[in-house]
Image (cartoon, rainbow, N blue to C red; front, side, top):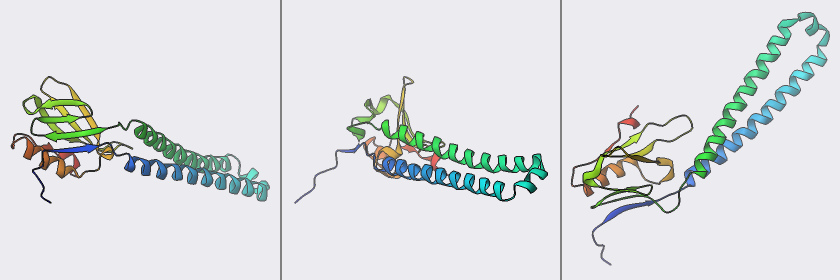
Length: 179
């Protein structure tokens, strides 16, 4: 069996990383709800057990209870927002080919550009609850992107493929991944 030359790098959309993130966030939401429930039960139990002393303590007692509940609710809200963002990202995963890099040019999320039309290929920084993304900017100002969590490839592979297929004219700017 002989292998011929590699004509292009083709990557389909792969939701597996996002499916894992949604499952993880769902488990975190459940955990925070259970934790909030336990906190409420403990606070109510303390109140009934030490009601007389706590009523004598006055407003300080309610401030401490409010702070404890506020922290628990804020933590739950944060995890819930991250869960909803992960679900939204999962729904946004496309079908078919996410990226195709070949000798004629690049196709990213349905946008095709020949090598002379490309202004830049870069990886954008990750944002809260979102992964870094591969961004294609065209000379006419249009741009498109695909999250790196939607394709199963290392960013360096993208850079190597772009350099090889463009004849060294283009590479992927990976500086956003540096810490």
